[in-house]
Amino acid sequence: MPPSPDVHPHCTGSEMKSTNSTIRCEHPRPAVFLDRDGTLIEDHGDLSDPSQVVFYEDTVTALLRLADRFALFIVTNQSGVAKGTITIEGVHRVNGYVEEYLAARGVPIAAIYVCPHLRSSGCECIKPKPHFLKEAERNFNIDLRRSFVIGDHPHDVELAMQVGATGIYVLSGHGMKHRGELTMETIVVDGIGEATDKILATAS
Image 1 (tube, rainbow, N blue to C red):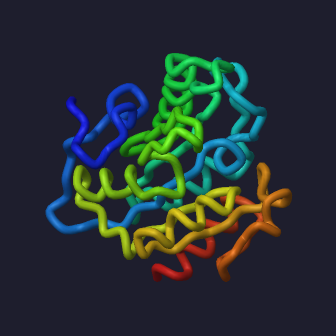
Image 2: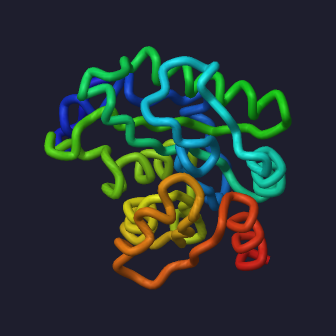
């Protein structure tokens, strides 16, 4: 797939893993865009093997509650690929396991988007740039203004702001460490379970 003119030449192809990239709903649907490390699974640095994955206890329950009303996506920065500490194949192995683990428990993930670049590279896909959210909007007919972004870094909240979505900052993972870097008023919760409570209360 050739990159479009406004996209960094390394922002297409292997860094995006999508299982249903051509599925569209008749009417625009809201989505929840989920950070991976520190939000769905424990953050143990650069992961390259499924054996390193540890889900938070309330991840599956929380996502099951969301799945009936929202399309679910994972959006993750994995700069270890550019640093050489992990490979893109290793990232896809881990993502494949995460996707299969959740699917086996009734949680469908529409697509997993990965940016493998350093922030200094000038790519268009690293959070908080909205490249992948715009791609989901096009490919899955997503209503971004009715959508949510959950993550443990201020960039996740900024990502939501870029597209008019609602950001929810979790204190799991590196959330406590980076809380002081938040530059805007946002919803702050302990973890994915409480984030789900907030979303369902807001969307009801």
